[in-house]
Image 1 (cartoon, one colour):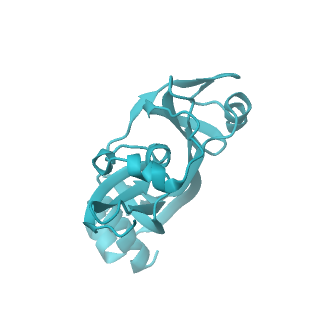
Image 2 (spheres, one colour; image 1 turned 45 degrees about the vertical axis):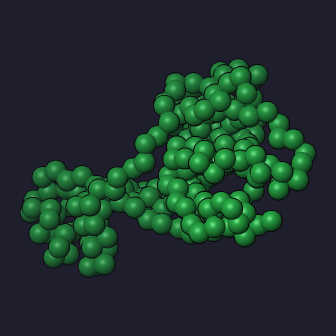
Length: 224
């Protein structure tokens, strides 16, 4: 294993990434076609609940290495490691809006199976057919907060003035004896910019895996 790979593993092992708080976990999702639980196949989810309202994707790579019994930290620093194996998995977050009387569901799907089901706030009725400017005028900038879903933003504030997106890699790791494991997650990060006009501040919402993870304010806006 080359030094660059070892440095990547070392970063993942010694600097665990702090994750944003997740919505509450649930065991199942009830749709018109029936109940879907963790462990069910993706075909059961689509068959019983239909297509998701939104889909977000990320990639998870798990790398295991051996340090031949030596302490993990010096071995990684010196590049004296041997790969035991690696696996890469595409992970998707399917967001379901089941209407205003039910909670939004965020369903994690990996390798063709449901691996996690989370709940967020109540869903939204079908959005009215109106000009984006009218919906934006009713959107309270202060109401855009961490933990909101992407679906919440679209339903309450509509499309942003600007969308930016890029890939970021984060690492988590653990070490025991002469072995170490690092999980590297490549996520698509989006920043949605909302322009509320010259009398209010621009708001920047950072979105990962279908949820708002950070919100910042900018200068006064420009839209009229």
